[in-house]
Amino acid sequence: MSENTLNIYEKKAEEMTATHIIPVEAKFSATEGGFISLDLNGKHYDRVKVVRLFPFTDANKYLSIREYGGASKEIGIIEDLDAMPEETKSLIEHQLTLCYFTPVISKIYSIKDEYGYAYFHVLTDKGECKFAINMGSNAVSKLSDTRLIIQDVDENRFEIRDTDALTQKEKRMLDLFM
Image 1 (cartoon, rainbow, N blue to C red):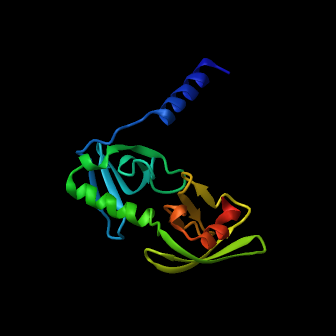
Image 2 (cartoon, rainbow, N blue to C red):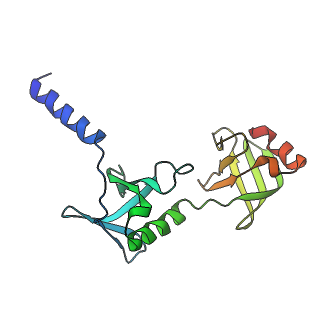
Image 3 (cartoon, one colour):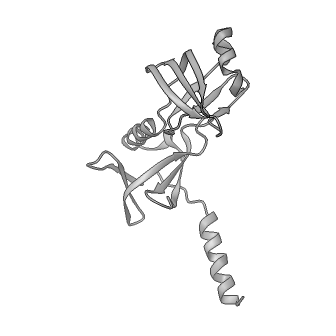
């Protein structure tokens, strides 16, 4: 491999691993379609994606701002959303609410296991709901000894904040996933 080729690979690797902090002066705007655009350092991004790097432990810190689309290349990171101007903070919080919509399960009516899928019938803080998960996947994630995140076949997320708050019958239904 030539030295020039090696330098190209080193430069690409450096670009891929570099962290760019988004300054508070960055201009985020709502698009007509309800998305977010960004103007930063003389460059306009028609649509950007906001991703929480620590969604359960530091929801408003270290937000990755990415180009929208296939590769979702990272543009930069907002270190602390609370430090951003109120208009920007409000705009980004709205997008995060849509992206990270996670109803909290308060009651489990039933869980039926059929043909490799588990069918849940639950009560959440957003109302009664039925959904299915693929039993062969990692659809249920333990965040702690008593906190679970469940992702259904449509990639919707549901949370059980405290399994100890469930009845014995509800806990037995969840035993398969614990």
